[in-house]
Length: 609
Ligand SMILES: [Zn+2]
Image (cartoon, rainbow, N blue to C red; front, side, top):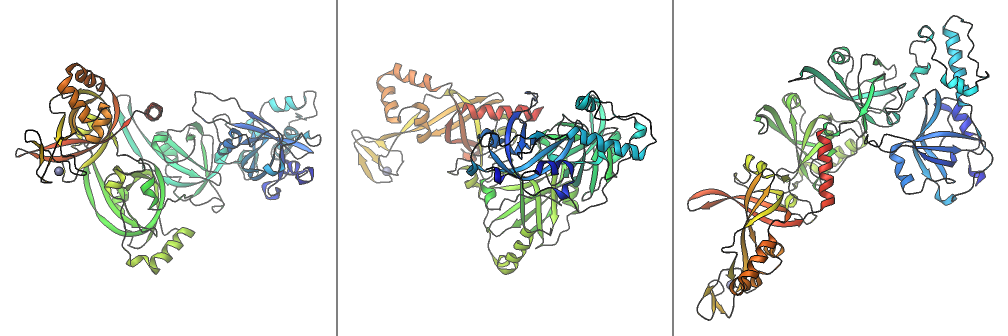
């Protein structure tokens, strides 16, 4: 194994710049240790890993996206790893290797420590570098900060920072611009600079409430390692809004790092940045070093399998551009401008995408252009559709491979093709277990579900609070697939439809139940399949009890009551004695999955914070 190790790699990484780093070094894991983090912060665990090349060892921080390797016990003491992506950062005046990607070489097994590796004098090297810079840029002060002092490394590590006059202004080679990957940011360090591209800039939003008024804006920032969202309030809007331009690359330092409020963003990062009075932002000289945008496309066909409210990336050919419409939000009574457009892709599906506000009004892309969307939200209104969020971005004819492939397909065969939609039925009653949007009873009523021409589907978490005892079931034709009501002919039962007489009917449920939740109560109709699940008996059995054992019947009714379920329902207009009204029918029920429901609640509570 020893011959596979990249002997000497750590010293090179420690002393040279990124351009001379050895590619994909192979190292041995000496220890894996979880860093102490605040367990209530909600942030994922972080691991510190000591890596050895058999001559030296070095501390490294594992990017959280690699945490699963620790959980799966693949990344363990004695194992061998090949780094595929890494960088070196300065944390608390120490150089630390940040590992963004690695492969565990399981074929090399697990071994005792190879060789007798020594620690790298990271602090010494760093102080020396710093001193050289200070000496070069400031008058001699006669103060020595030699690391060979009595206090050794500790003294150096805790030595006071040089006075401000000795600080060099930010320049590409100075310490303050050693670039952190966005992925490496956390609230536990505050000396960092990122180099990132603004991929999205919001409009300035104003708010007024009891506590006062204010304004804010936010940007999405991207580098090779990941993305983060940054927000500026009030004075920081004035200071930075005009400086930050979408598409440009900036050096950014001195922001507060907070836990991300994920309900407001599609950015995959557990943290977010807040601009402060001291925040420094400077446009980068090199605008090309940072990727333009990172997409993780979902095909339009696959959108049918994505959960509602998921935030995804899609790419397609623009087929149709609808007019700008003014709509009023049911929830807030505020007016919005919206515009629906349709895109298609080579999976043969079309998809409606809704644009809002300024984007909707100013949309002027010509048909058959390629549109790439980052961070659009999945709705299940009328099958499946997509909706832009304020954090979403739309690129027209982006210069990426997917775009060129799509263009080629469209010119070749796509232009004349028919496209499929994700239908309402497939999104509400599919066998994949996907279900209609969860509503509470007040929402079902406030949103007038079922009052339009097409039925609406919804799911409801509720408890049966009452079961009507009259007409629980009806005598039905026992022939297969004929559920018609049959009539007692005195000794035999006649089905008009089958034109036949039977010795006995088969009873089928038509139960009316009242279901309650914390917002109200709703009457639901239940037919035979669901009735059996609720009553734990067939309608024949229950009918028998009702006729012969009143007590047992009442007990059965009582036991079925006060049970919680998830009801999958349809709301549909119904002409009842000349009057239109909405009938709610239970299509299926699910037992409460308490674990799943608890997760939903936790997500809801977290999103409300
Ligand atoms: Zn029949």
